[in-house]
Length: 393
Image (cartoon, rainbow, N blue to C red; front, side, top):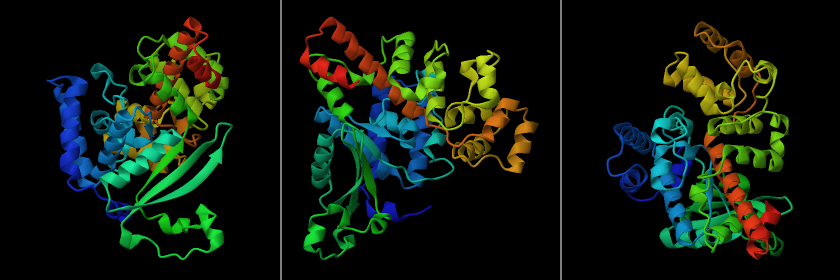
């Protein structure tokens, strides 16, 4: 494991503060007497995160989420870091990773890469342009001992969506560069991108929908993004998704009846080379229920556990397959020995990428939010704010 990013940015007493934040959040999320299984998982996660020296990442994500809430901003942290109970209890994810019996969607902690792979978390934040500016000010005030470098990554789309990367460095680590007049007019030439690779950073993905959702959430519309999926029927969500999401064009004939099935289908749509071969044939012939298909990396992990693999081996196989690395000869023999279905073995040899389940859950929540906006539009078609958002969604 590399240590350069860890050493380049550290929050003092991060382990202790993160634990305090999470323990308070545990009571807020699960009540004054949380289930023992929930408490045990949180303690296990915090121990692993502390051992891996990653508490700074999680605590900073929590601080940014609280700052967004204070400023009435909408932000979504993407990626595997949101698969943990730590993320849920510290407030930067509203996706409950526990099993269904505890109100969650079953995201194993292994998905965060803290358990076995020990991969440094990425802080990728989907937000408005305004929040990036707010975040810069917040970071400057909260951590004055660090300097910031903003590096633009890309610009695309009709709505001016851009991504920028914010690096945090100690003054003594800042490169000593004398800029020419030409360089001063071109921010992208200020620093060598390769030089910055070893330093801690946050990627901000600018998305106009975040600003529009903020305006709707904190106006007289009073629609709460955090609870957007409450009271929205799966039938309406599926109808809306098929209409608005081009990635679902190959799945439009499927009958989606449950929340779990909706996650499965959208996961397949955003994964690569999943919806094909025996799996597709068996679903269309109704020999394989939607509830049993593999759409996300978590689905594959759960499948392997169910047929008898231990958690560590299930992680190594699912982590390899989700990146398109396919099975080793030994893993293939093990799958057959455990009685894996033929369609599953075929899928493991075909798939190029498996999408994370937590991100799909966030997408569904956004769809539900947009549906509620559309409902308000039908009730009040002359409301200028709703008309603006309706034009976007």
